[in-house]
Image 1: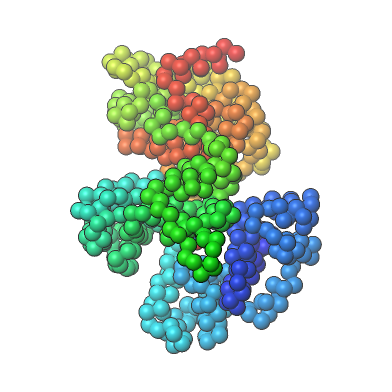
Image 2 (image 1 turned 90 degrees about the horizontal axis):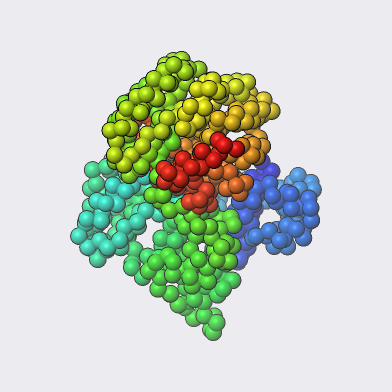
Length: 584
Ligand code: DGT
Ligand code: CA
Ligand code: CA
Ligand code: ZN
């Protein structure tokens, strides 16, 4: 655990302790502070070093008494009050709270009656069917808790967006056809286009809730039904992920969609802001708090769309992709949201593999598929000879491939194939093809497929050298990360940005689902540094061209505009850009 994680955990546990004791207001304050620290990470300590308690209080969600505790922690490495609490109540609140539906009072009961201190203890109590013996609990709560625990243990198995999004879209299309249904939308991490997702969260409005719920649990993708209700149903899909459907009234559609889109941090900050403006905001809607009698009920404000909520709060609507609970809220308040690249902006694909090396299909077949995907050009970028096991191209075969591309281009109308390469970067930073061969190409991408574990210094040096070759146009899948399989390689990203900027080398957003490389935060740094980006599929088969929107989503998550992405240019403009670059 890092220092800030430890701190976030302690504050979170204070929040549960106070909730167990029915202390008013404090639980919320602790929870906000905890979430704030999770978001700010090391910045908390940086602020404390600079300005102590006073600087801490300037951070979002942190007031005087919590600032004092944080100060104590950074000074002494512990919080006395926390140690005392742990002595009286030696329970892993943090761990247990990760189970859906297990609140402070439940955790208190579990300890009081069964001496459950942690997840292992809970597993034991469930196995022995002890939980149903707790006063007011019963069989049903026990079963629910068992399912919650199981769900949590499985939750580490997150899935790739590229795998789940098409399925979510298919489900939505099917539900939209059910009689009575007005609107169906996906919320949660899928709507935000996070690179991995935990489950599929769907919302619907309908005049006939029963009918849509029946249709939902009967979908051919469903393996088993966790719960079938009138307002909420939850199923396990055959592909191995859960899917929830909530049916909601039309007049709170906006508020509910907003809430279930998240992310949680964004919601916390927005709710806090709403409070400061005299509103309360929750999954049940936006309410105006009354000024008069204390008992007066808050008044629901009808918000059929999300935009109405943000508008009522005096701000623009941040696109879901950038709702991460950071600076997007302030930008929305100041009407300074970025002009994100719209979906469908990419004109061509600049990384395509064919059956000349490890692709499945011929140049012609790939061209046909790219065109069918609505693009106007593609660059053939087969691997080079360092990758001997896939028969990477040497200079001779590359020249031969060029002739073949000329021949095919003659027969194509309204579509152009560019001659390119995915040239390997050797361990010492030299390139796998001669400068003469590279100079003849329209588009030169370079990338790393070996020596992933060089030291940071060596890796940085290697890449700087490669990107300093004037023939190089683009650095493909720059971090080499494979989600769930390989860690990113280690180098000084800022230095690479500077070199890319200086040499007019673009950095790639590789859309291939397990790559998603660059990721959102890299993109944001590149945009800030003024480095050009390209969005490529890295297609190895015709069906891979549908990955383009995944890359556009990463660009959006990184606050990129159309002008930041080189291949949003029509072919002519792209060629002009490249010609200019090579004249320099
Ligand atoms: P996932 O499923 O792990 O990929 O991530 P999400 O963001 O889809 O999370 P999920 O499915 O647990 O919940 C969907 C949204 O509902 C989430 O993004 C925000 C909202 N939400 C859920 N629980 C809470 C909560 O405790 N507090 C707040 N403020 N919002 C929540
Ligand atoms: Ca979710
Ligand atoms: Ca969910
Ligand atoms: Zn590659």
